[in-house]
Length: 288
Image (cartoon, rainbow, N blue to C red; front, top):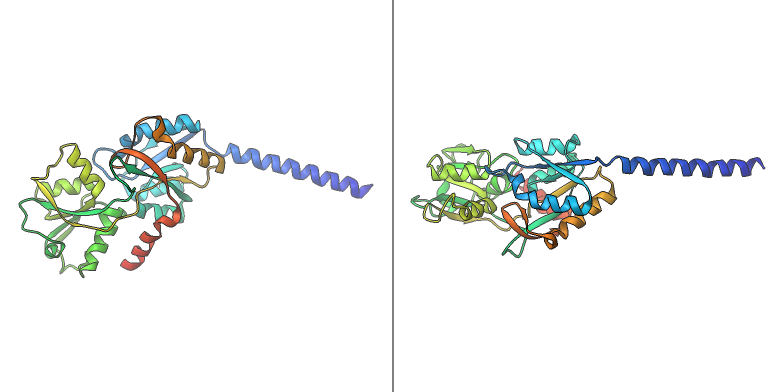
């Protein structure tokens, strides 16, 4: 009789603990999710995502509010400290966030007219510049976007190292300037503050489309290989149920209206995984 009583007590206790655990798991999801954006543009990247966020909020039944940060590291820190549960990261920033901030990439946007979510680094000069190829940038003033950027820092350094140029070698460049973001780098070329800019193709195309620049002012002297897309990511601290709802709502968002993203209007979003960014991890090792 005593053994039967103990067995029943254990079953009851386990049931209570499981119920408590489940209730805590669901209760741990914030009522309002905060979404952070890396500062890639002068024009405010969060505005490109307003329609997408509205559709995700409605279909996943969760309220999402955007927050701003001043640099790439601050975006990672926001998720690490649980001040943000969703993010749009650059690829390089995502790698760091996955390592220290429980971030998990889940989707990336494909622009209208494109067949892939990937993009490129462009090296851009003024149209009247005498620089014609990447080899010509030696001993010139090089502009980059922001430390931590993929297409405005990591990939430019990789492309330069392929031709035996390094921004760490003072004999290779007259000066290396970090302008803060891709748009600022592009405008620095236009205004003759720098000789060449390593920047994101997405920003270049967007500024061409909105008339900020034109093809008779600047030109591209070098294009990198395809770069893994900057992902949307969520914190693994969120319940799996909520993460699944957010991902499904994102992948189906194009069915409910026009959607935006990095570089303008998107045709749709595709699923991405953490392993899709192993290429960038390899490149970081290559630079060391």
